[in-house]
Length: 101
Image (cartoon, rainbow, N blue to C red):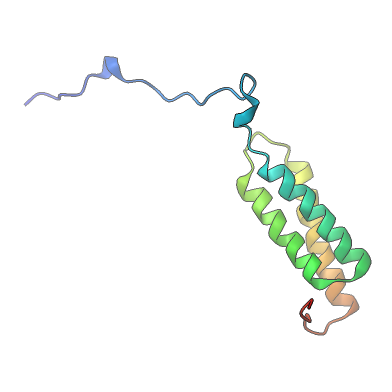
């Protein structure tokens, strides 16, 4: 039996260019990065532990949805800011987190 596949007919996948169609660009990492920074600043300034934890969650989502070609400095600074918000909020008040309601 010969191989029925035809290597000359193989069509390689080429992702669509985002320059020609900006609707294909996913804004989720940017929004999550911004939300993470806002929540981490609220966690640091207002000493709200739940804001700091939400900032860590948003930073993880931003990191998970980002592309490898994006700027990693901004993402890592957002992640470190959210981690520092959690650490500082627990250093100032080591009691367990109280529910926000």
